[in-house]
Length: 216
Image 1 (tube, helix red, strand yellow):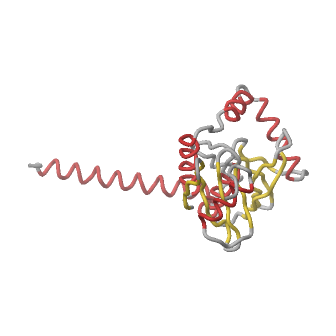
Image 2 (cartoon, rainbow, N blue to C red):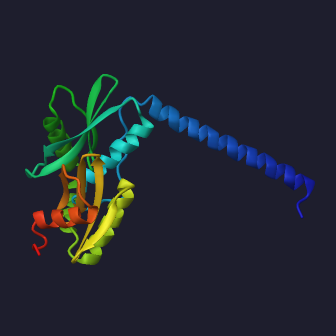
């Protein structure tokens, strides 16, 4: 049985914890509310060919934390020439490009592509970055189990979507807008189309379009 002293001490500790929690919450709010630049909010986990997943999740998170910031997902070319999704953020009279690996860079006197390219090259010059990219490219899942795990992570990052298994492939399907559908498969990335159909049918259609399954 607790003594009167222990009850008082526990009560004061509870008040202290509550005060500390409130202080941290206010501090975090003030940090985002008065941010000079948008936060990078990099993903805790990396998935293969998941740049659009990351960009979509970032837009949703930033809308909650910095509602005054305007965002747009745009397509750029990576250093190897392949397509890539980044987010352009406009706030405080300035524009920034956010990449899921590179982070945030101000677009100052440049277009989005030039800003991204400069940021990517600078990032690659950092110690170990080139090796990290090589490791991630070589780790594209090859087995159904590995692909399924990455789809589960993608759904966790995105916070929405339905998962379907078609043959040996696992696909995450969601609706970025009321008029579009998207399907993510780790080995090929995300396909987006202006269609309206059953989610499982769209998953099969995406795999067929990418040549991963044969038509029946």
